[in-house]
Length: 284
Image 1 (cartoon, rainbow, N blue to C red):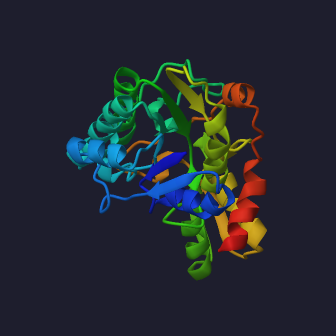
Image 2: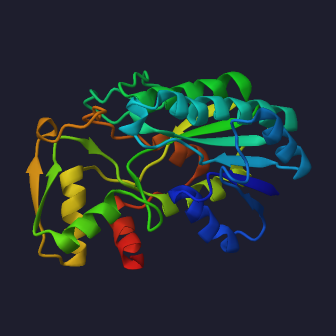
C-alpha cells in the first residue's frame, strides 16, 4: 500500500517517519512543501497519480495560532485551499484521505467532553481555517477520515513540552495558565493509531469525523507541572489566569475530547497523557 504523508517535517510527520520501519508492509512517501506544495492542485494531482498513492495522511498545516490572526491568507492557503486540492485529487485517484484537524474548531465553552457531533464554532482564525478545511474534505472527498486532535507535542519540532524544558533550564520560575483545560497528545501515539487504523477502514466509507487525544485531562499548568516533576526540576511553576497572559488569539477554555467513537469503531487503546509524556521526555 502506497501511503503519502504530507507535512512530514513537522511534529506528527516526523513521528510517522520514525514509525515507518515498524510498518514495513506500507510503502511511504514523505513530503513537505519543498517536495509537494498542496496549494498547487495540478502538481498535487500529478504526484498522486505518478506514485499511485492509495492513502494520504495530511499533516500539512499552518499551526501558528497567534500568527494566523495577522496572516489569514497564508493560513487559508494551507488549511483550506490545500486541503480542498488534496480532497479533490484523492477522490479522482480513489485514495483514502486522512486529514488531521484540531480541537480549536470548538468554542471551548462546554462543560463536558466534546463529541464529533457537537457544533463547531471556532473563535480564532486558526480554528476557522481548520474548520474550512474539514468542510472541504466533507464536500470533495469520496473516502476520508477527519481526525481532530489537541495539544500536540513531540520530541520533534517546537511545542509546549520543549518550551517548558528550555525555560526551566534557564529560569527559576515560570507562569503557566491554569484555566485552559484539554488533552495533551503525544504525536507518536496519534501516528501509531492512524497506521493501525488504516487497514481497518471500511472500503465503502464516506467521510467520518473522529476525535483522538491521549486519555486524561489537564490544564496547561498541570501539564507544565508534570514536566517539571518527571524531570525532577527545581523550577517553580506558578498558575495564572488567561487574562494575565494575553495573546493575539484567544484560546478556548475547555476543549476536552470524547474518544469513545474512535475506540469503539477501530478497537484501539489510548494511553494516558502522563504515561506518554514520560516516554517523550526520555527522548529529550
